[in-house]
Length: 99
Length: 211
Image (cartoon, rainbow over all chains, first blue to last red; front, top):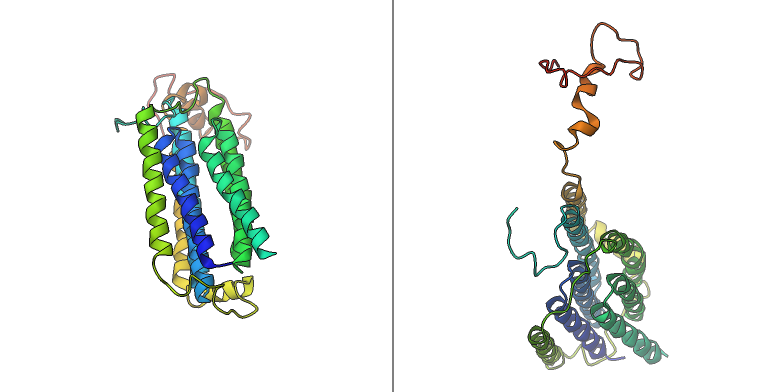
């Protein structure tokens, strides 16, 4: 398989994630769409690592996974904190930072 | 054979991504994302990235998604419906933006003219992407990013606990009664067990608190 096919799949997944972030209003689903975009970037990194016969891109993908796990942890903590304070779980309702 | 596996995995990945965005129930979105991650792990295996594929399945589809499922079950149990649909204008603009982004990305990758992209990939040695090689790189060439990533994980874990903890210190004073903590430290009747101590509270008796 040519490497371009993998990059096209990566572009598709990235665009679906970007569109999902704009369309959806539930912060949980927005985090999921963020995961989609990070995974598309991972696929592109691994593809370039394979294309050049160099393993550095795979290390980069693993570091991206770590950062994604951190982002998920913080984001889900925020959602739980929102739920505890009886705030609406909807990003359109949460426009103001009023403490 | 590789082509068949690639197309099955690619269709699975794109379908999983579409399902994540389109499904109404966040719980089903999480399950769809698990399918997407498994298909992506198959693509990683095709690209000779064994360790990344294993980490994808174990860490992402195993651990992170369980976290998502727990939070979805915790939050969706409420009364109010989650995340209604936006207006048709915003949706149209979003789809347009995503399509334009796809066109730009395809032009950027396919039109780049990089000679390495048009072929099957460069030659590789047999241990390419194996856990042994990745571990060797992580502990020699990329030792500093490895340590920084571990520190970042620690910071994220502590930060999420701080974010999601119960902020009810003053409200729960009746429930736990701070005076109970002081009542057992009276010097006169230290019997050795805290359960037998008298439950008189200094706060409720309006006495100054002694430490």
